[in-house]
Image 1: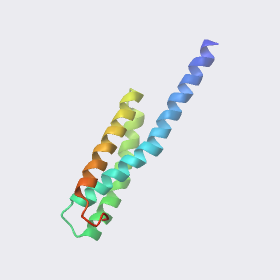
Image 2: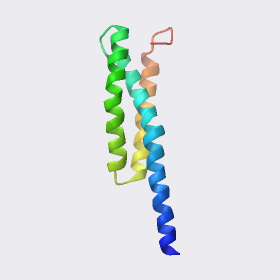
Image 3: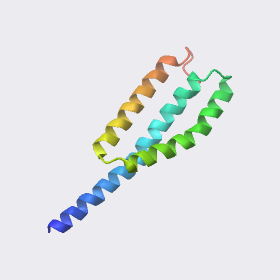
Image 4: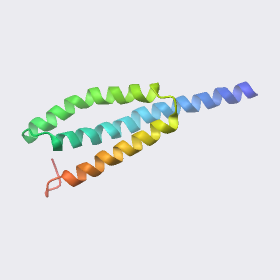
Length: 100
């Protein structure tokens, strides 16, 4: 019985990391690429294209960090905090029209 419980717990931990990688990683990557597009001193179209290309590498690094981290709580708090910071900074930097 104890082995079955440990196995189920391990499966939930892996499922949580996969969810963090897919959903949380995507959210953080999206927020960070938006922030980069707003910050880069390039013409608007070039800044969006460059931040989009960089987002593929960023998403890969986030996934590696999620699965390399020892504590799942650190992963979720890091994802939520970084996404919130990037989102708030992006909202503050958006031009008056509200779009890139």
